[in-house]
Image: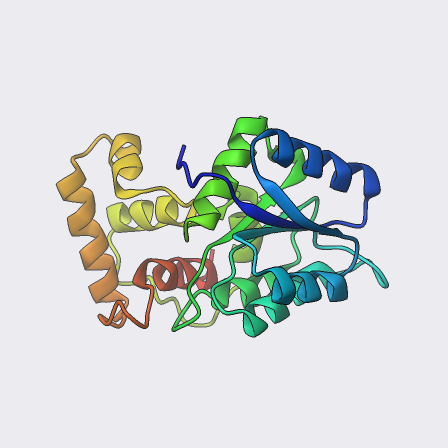
Length: 227
């Protein structure tokens, strides 16, 4: 687990019991919940006011209970660039999920996560994901990745990748570090680093790390490619 220490957290979920449960869980884990709100407008206001270390956001909130949470998260990151957001929902809303992930490119940066409530198997797993997002990482549930991949594109930016490079990129999309990828594929860290460099080169990603997060841009290319 990445230990980011005590964090200041905003929670946005219209389900009162779940919202209060998250407040209690995070408080007992040593974090400070600076705001707990039930709609998208309140989320944006809370992020602008409190500048939290991370926000936990549901997708479906009032008034239409469709995609207000994701749209509010996109707006919050527009208003407060790099503010980390962990989406925690029962649903995958493809269009705005893609827009939210796109905010990690360029000068935006900042951590992004998208987990499905029913697939979070343990509290420690959730807390670990929250730490990773707060630290600037990207954490995506494989089911979220799968549904995003349904959005096919005419051109496949991954056509030039080898099967092994595609495996590495898929594991990158799950938020795994190079060391974790090496363990999963039973190869050396150096081999993974070489594959990652090749992926960046073949996808023609910008080399300027101060304005572009190449790892996130590579993941976005993976999500946008035909399944």
